[in-house]
Image (tube, rainbow, N blue to C red; front, side, top):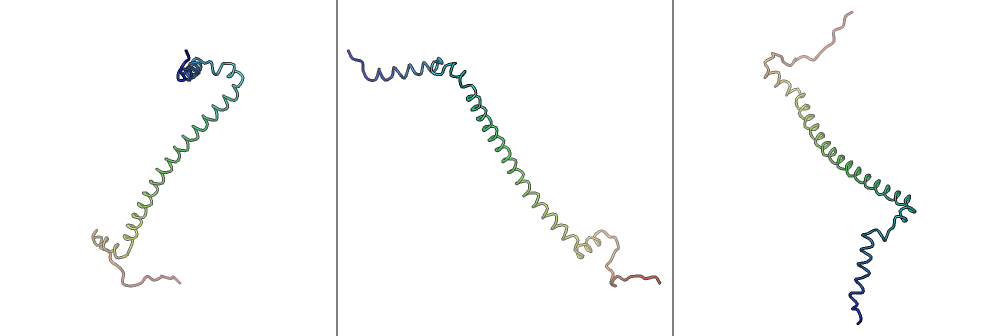
Length: 116
């Protein structure tokens, strides 16, 4: 009339699990004695989670702003190139001729008028 080894090994496991579910493993007295440590541990865990979330949010914002900066830099180079090509004398002459303003390039160099 001996019990099998499998039934005796499952019995403590079940009782430990049932004791845990019914709050008999960690008693109210344990929480009353160690409330400060538990509260501190929970506060540190909450601060860790908050810090991780804020860091991930800031990193995503940095990635977005970096992409936007690259686009703006490219646009600035394109606009600068278009501006530099328009201020060349030949381009200005073509623009003035196409608008029909009747302006022409002077053949004589500029000179100063002095009054004595």
